[in-house]
Image (cartoon, one colour):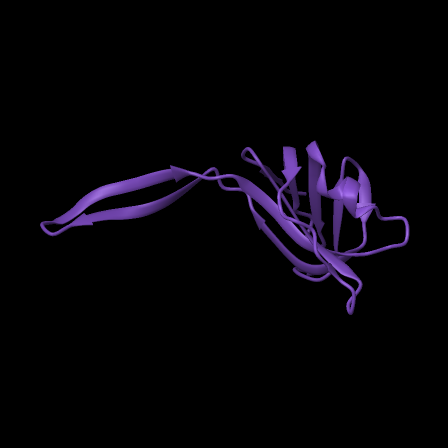
Length: 119
């Protein structure tokens, strides 16, 4: 049974060369306990954006200017175990920096709550 390894990263159906370091968070909120000096008070829920972040190879036909400006796109991350993370209405948030020694860029797409699809 395969649980890790091969993965694919796509934006609006265009596949990018995934180097690694893929991180995915599709939750819609973060929870934390609220505790006062007199004990436990409850739970605090704070909304948060979902994201898919990864390193991609800087291919000759890759235009970082266009990649940096992408918004309102659908991003998918497909794992070898059959799970697919989908993030719709996403936008690229970080300033792209080229690691010339490794020939790679780190991209981070954020958006409203994403979803996990399973095989």
